[in-house]
Image (cartoon, rainbow, N blue to C red; front, top):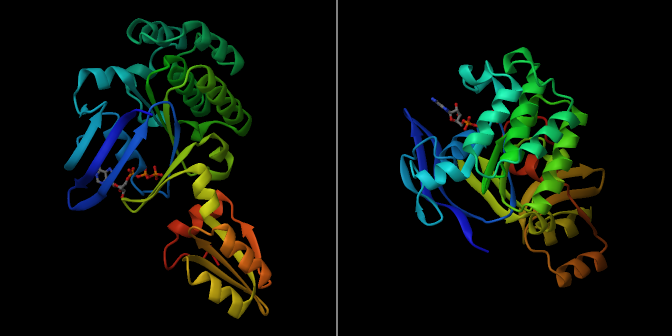
Length: 298
Ligand SMILES: Nc1ncnc2c1ncn2[C@@H]1O[C@H](COP(=O)(O)OP(=O)(O)OP(=O)(O)O)[C@@H](O)[C@H]1O
């Protein structure tokens, strides 16, 4: 598949703070990406660079092979939808109907009929101004605009945080259905890992400004697993992998590890009496991004 966006040795420094550190990856056409990271990991900073809204300090960011920043084609093709409170004041003074009309005029792929059907589905009051809506409703309006714009690259930076659970659920369903009929590159940043993981085809994990993981969803969840059993046997097998977490349950040891297990090692481990289990993406994310002094992770 063709690469849409590429990032090479990207660094972003703000003041004296190294916000993004030597990041390289490519995003393919038509895939849904999850960008995961704890608070302050650098998600918004990275996504605003991908949207061409911020310039990197060092490195190279390209859209379809051309430098991205201030490139007209990239600006027309990439949409960035983020948390409501940060949206521009003048936009928030508009009615939903006006916003739809305006978007229809400047986004060539915008599907007005689809937008109106979503507005109905989400029960949004079309004649109210955005700043008269609740935070969750405002987020939903931007999610609707983002979906119906059908841009080649759509970035949702935690736009769903203000929505309640049923609204988020409808948004996820719509996103999957619309992506199936109109494939395009979609990037979703979140820390709502367990509730959104079914959406992702590929995952990037950021941690303290570094890219920790760049992996397909399938391979990522396959590479995280748990070995449980006799302590010495667990140690013998787990030393071949990256150790993520250790738990002692009496004489039984349970470790979460990351790496290529392979069928041969799996059957050896099972033969040696170990239980080999899966770990959820959420746990994998927690283990990989925990800090030394985090007490919430045992
Ligand atoms: N304008 C700025 N001036 C100084 N530091 C900044 C600025 N913008 C971001 N940062 C710093 O960059 C780091 C990454 O911030 P960013 O907003 O990209 O993280 P995030 O992963 O999106 O976090 P969250 O999940 O909390 O929204 C943080 O340490 C933040 O304090």
